[in-house]
Picture 1 (cartoon, rainbow, N blue to C red):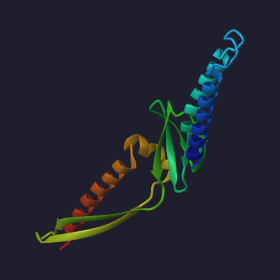
Picture 2 (cartoon, rainbow, N blue to C red):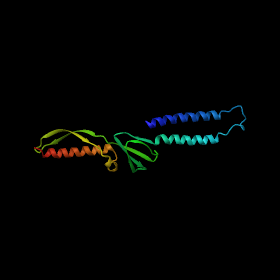
Picture 3 (cartoon, one colour):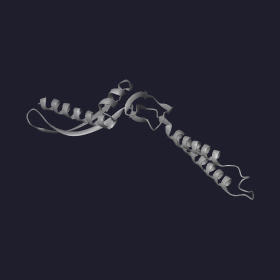
Picture 4 (spheres, one colour):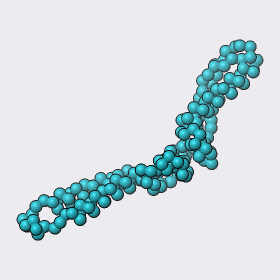
Length: 166
């Protein structure tokens, strides 16, 4: 939400700067030596424009039910809990992880001890713990990779248990 507001402010400020530059550069009935120099104004306008480009993208919002791992030039720096933060967007990258309970439905087949085929439907629930989020980010890189690993382990363990059943 804050990015939308800052983007709107950015657009209006940009339009105002363009209008002022156009109005100041149009010749009036004065001689050119009597006109004020637009050079200092142009420098200020460029600085303001650069700030308006970098500031809206530097606000990051972490929603409720999520946590963010902040990487500064690729290295994990900190973990951010829900809230709004100001971090320079060109060097800081936010990876958002969902901390709500995840539900997964896994459909697989397995064999019993005597060779009978079983079609299995496994419902799995898990939740990412905030205190382990740095380990997850380091080892898996994303929530999708973690989910794929959890599914693989669940299928392997389910087949192992079912193969020992008669």
